[in-house]
Image 1 (spheres, rainbow, N blue to C red):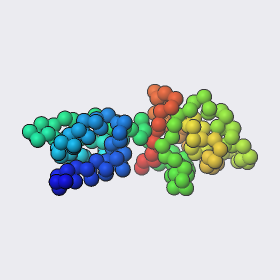
Image 2 (cartoon, rainbow, N blue to C red; image 1 turned 90 degrees about the vertical axis):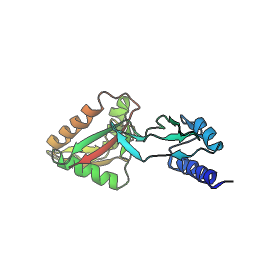
Image 3 (cartoon, rainbow, N blue to C red; image 1 turned 60 degrees about the vertical axis):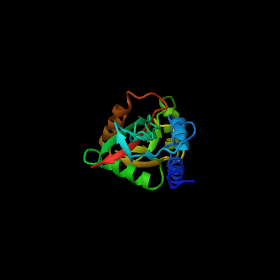
Image 4 (cartoon, rainbow, N blue to C red; image 1 turned 30 degrees about the vertical axis):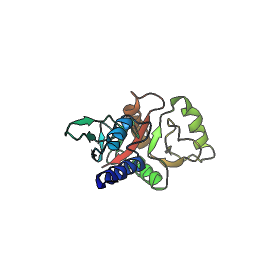
Length: 184
Protein backbone atom coordinates (compact mmCIF):
# COMPACT_ATOMS: atom_id res chain seq x y z
CA UNK A 1 0.00 0.00 0.00
CA UNK A 2 1.40 3.42 -0.93
CA UNK A 3 2.22 5.93 1.80
CA UNK A 4 -0.44 8.25 0.37
CA UNK A 5 -3.13 5.60 0.83
CA UNK A 6 -1.89 4.75 4.33
CA UNK A 7 -2.17 8.40 5.31
CA UNK A 8 -5.64 8.63 3.75
CA UNK A 9 -6.82 5.51 5.62
CA UNK A 10 -5.36 6.85 8.87
CA UNK A 11 -7.17 10.18 8.36
CA UNK A 12 -10.52 8.45 7.74
CA UNK A 13 -10.03 6.42 10.91
CA UNK A 14 -9.21 9.60 12.82
CA UNK A 15 -12.31 11.33 11.42
CA UNK A 16 -14.45 8.42 12.58
CA UNK A 17 -12.92 8.53 16.07
CA UNK A 18 -13.59 12.24 16.57
CA UNK A 19 -17.09 12.01 15.11
CA UNK A 20 -16.54 13.99 11.90
CA UNK A 21 -17.31 11.02 9.70
CA UNK A 22 -19.27 7.84 10.01
CA UNK A 23 -20.88 5.40 7.59
CA UNK A 24 -24.26 7.16 7.80
CA UNK A 25 -23.11 10.78 7.62
CA UNK A 26 -23.55 12.94 4.55
CA UNK A 27 -20.69 12.68 2.12
CA UNK A 28 -19.11 9.52 3.52
CA UNK A 29 -19.60 7.45 0.36
CA UNK A 30 -18.06 10.14 -1.81
CA UNK A 31 -15.03 10.42 0.47
CA UNK A 32 -14.65 6.65 0.74
CA UNK A 33 -14.76 6.32 -3.03
CA UNK A 34 -12.22 9.10 -3.50
CA UNK A 35 -9.92 7.66 -0.84
CA UNK A 36 -10.16 4.19 -2.40
CA UNK A 37 -8.87 5.68 -5.67
CA UNK A 38 -5.93 7.32 -3.89
CA UNK A 39 -7.20 10.89 -3.47
CA UNK A 40 -5.98 12.93 -0.52
CA UNK A 41 -8.32 14.50 2.01
CA UNK A 42 -7.96 17.87 3.69
CA UNK A 43 -9.89 18.70 6.87
CA UNK A 44 -10.31 21.72 9.04
CA UNK A 45 -10.93 22.10 12.74
CA UNK A 46 -14.33 22.23 14.40
CA UNK A 47 -15.81 25.65 14.89
CA UNK A 48 -18.87 27.19 16.51
CA UNK A 49 -21.14 28.85 13.96
CA UNK A 50 -24.49 30.36 14.91
CA UNK A 51 -24.44 28.51 18.21
CA UNK A 52 -23.94 25.05 16.70
CA UNK A 53 -20.75 23.04 16.48
CA UNK A 54 -19.95 22.15 12.91
CA UNK A 55 -17.00 20.59 11.23
CA UNK A 56 -15.39 23.15 9.00
CA UNK A 57 -15.41 22.77 5.25
CA UNK A 58 -13.74 19.58 4.03
CA UNK A 59 -12.64 18.81 0.51
CA UNK A 60 -11.82 15.51 -1.12
CA UNK A 61 -9.32 16.30 -3.85
CA UNK A 62 -9.21 14.39 -7.11
CA UNK A 63 -6.00 13.69 -8.99
CA UNK A 64 -6.81 16.60 -11.30
CA UNK A 65 -6.97 18.99 -8.32
CA UNK A 66 -10.73 19.56 -8.45
CA UNK A 67 -12.52 19.43 -5.10
CA UNK A 68 -15.93 18.50 -3.78
CA UNK A 69 -17.05 20.40 -0.71
CA UNK A 70 -18.57 18.02 1.81
CA UNK A 71 -21.78 18.85 3.67
CA UNK A 72 -22.02 19.55 7.37
CA UNK A 73 -21.48 16.31 9.29
CA UNK A 74 -23.57 16.90 12.40
CA UNK A 75 -24.46 19.00 15.42
CA UNK A 76 -23.97 18.46 19.09
CA UNK A 77 -26.47 21.19 19.96
CA UNK A 78 -28.81 23.64 18.27
CA UNK A 79 -28.13 26.80 20.28
CA UNK A 80 -25.86 28.27 22.94
CA UNK A 81 -27.87 29.97 25.69
CA UNK A 82 -25.57 32.46 27.41
CA UNK A 83 -26.01 33.73 30.95
CA UNK A 84 -24.06 36.76 32.16
CA UNK A 85 -22.19 36.35 35.43
CA UNK A 86 -22.41 40.14 35.88
CA UNK A 87 -26.20 40.28 35.58
CA UNK A 88 -27.06 37.00 37.37
CA UNK A 89 -24.13 36.22 39.71
CA UNK A 90 -25.86 33.73 42.02
CA UNK A 91 -27.39 31.67 39.22
CA UNK A 92 -24.15 31.80 37.22
CA UNK A 93 -22.22 30.50 40.24
CA UNK A 94 -24.78 27.71 40.70
CA UNK A 95 -24.55 26.67 37.02
CA UNK A 96 -20.74 26.76 37.11
CA UNK A 97 -20.63 24.66 40.30
CA UNK A 98 -23.23 22.17 39.03
CA UNK A 99 -21.44 21.68 35.70
CA UNK A 100 -18.11 21.27 37.51
CA UNK A 101 -19.78 18.59 39.66
CA UNK A 102 -20.79 16.63 36.56
CA UNK A 103 -24.18 18.03 35.61
CA UNK A 104 -24.52 18.32 31.81
CA UNK A 105 -24.01 21.60 29.95
CA UNK A 106 -25.92 20.37 26.87
CA UNK A 107 -29.61 19.96 27.67
CA UNK A 108 -32.74 18.86 25.79
CA UNK A 109 -35.86 21.07 25.85
CA UNK A 110 -38.92 19.28 27.32
CA UNK A 111 -41.57 21.92 28.06
CA UNK A 112 -44.44 19.46 28.73
CA UNK A 113 -42.39 17.84 31.52
CA UNK A 114 -41.52 21.11 33.28
CA UNK A 115 -44.04 20.91 36.15
CA UNK A 116 -43.29 17.27 36.93
CA UNK A 117 -39.52 17.79 36.77
CA UNK A 118 -39.73 20.83 39.06
CA UNK A 119 -41.83 18.88 41.57
CA UNK A 120 -39.32 16.00 41.55
CA UNK A 121 -36.25 18.22 41.90
CA UNK A 122 -37.73 20.28 44.76
CA UNK A 123 -39.22 17.33 46.66
CA UNK A 124 -37.81 17.29 50.20
CA UNK A 125 -35.93 20.58 49.77
CA UNK A 126 -36.49 22.98 52.68
CA UNK A 127 -37.82 26.41 51.74
CA UNK A 128 -35.61 29.33 52.70
CA UNK A 129 -37.27 32.66 53.64
CA UNK A 130 -36.84 35.38 50.97
CA UNK A 131 -35.10 32.97 48.58
CA UNK A 132 -36.07 30.99 45.47
CA UNK A 133 -34.87 27.43 45.02
CA UNK A 134 -32.83 27.42 41.82
CA UNK A 135 -32.52 24.10 39.97
CA UNK A 136 -29.78 23.02 37.59
CA UNK A 137 -30.48 21.55 35.12
CA UNK A 138 -33.58 23.75 34.91
CA UNK A 139 -36.97 22.03 35.00
CA UNK A 140 -37.75 22.93 31.35
CA UNK A 141 -35.08 20.46 30.22
CA UNK A 142 -35.35 16.68 30.07
CA UNK A 143 -32.21 16.35 32.21
CA UNK A 144 -33.86 18.30 35.08
CA UNK A 145 -35.85 16.64 37.83
CA UNK A 146 -34.33 13.76 39.78
CA UNK A 147 -30.74 14.46 40.77
CA UNK A 148 -30.86 18.17 39.91
CA UNK A 149 -28.67 20.51 41.92
CA UNK A 150 -30.86 22.82 44.04
CA UNK A 151 -29.63 26.02 45.70
CA UNK A 152 -31.43 28.89 47.45
CA UNK A 153 -30.74 32.21 45.70
CA UNK A 154 -32.34 35.65 45.54
CA UNK A 155 -35.66 35.74 43.68
CA UNK A 156 -34.51 38.62 41.47
CA UNK A 157 -31.41 36.73 40.31
CA UNK A 158 -33.26 33.43 39.81
CA UNK A 159 -36.20 34.85 37.90
CA UNK A 160 -34.03 37.13 35.78
CA UNK A 161 -31.77 34.22 34.83
CA UNK A 162 -34.79 32.02 34.11
CA UNK A 163 -36.24 34.69 31.82
CA UNK A 164 -32.86 35.13 30.11
CA UNK A 165 -32.50 31.41 29.32
CA UNK A 166 -36.20 31.03 28.54
CA UNK A 167 -36.18 33.92 26.04
CA UNK A 168 -33.18 32.45 24.23
CA UNK A 169 -34.91 29.06 24.02
CA UNK A 170 -38.38 30.39 23.08
CA UNK A 171 -38.05 29.87 19.30
CA UNK A 172 -36.69 26.34 19.71
CA UNK A 173 -38.97 23.29 19.58
CA UNK A 174 -39.21 20.54 22.19
CA UNK A 175 -36.33 18.14 21.66
CA UNK A 176 -33.88 20.89 20.66
CA UNK A 177 -30.45 20.64 22.31
CA UNK A 178 -29.15 23.74 24.11
CA UNK A 179 -25.69 24.36 25.54
CA UNK A 180 -25.86 26.46 28.71
CA UNK A 181 -22.83 28.73 28.95
CA UNK A 182 -21.89 31.25 31.64
CA UNK A 183 -20.16 34.37 30.31
CA UNK A 184 -18.40 37.25 32.04
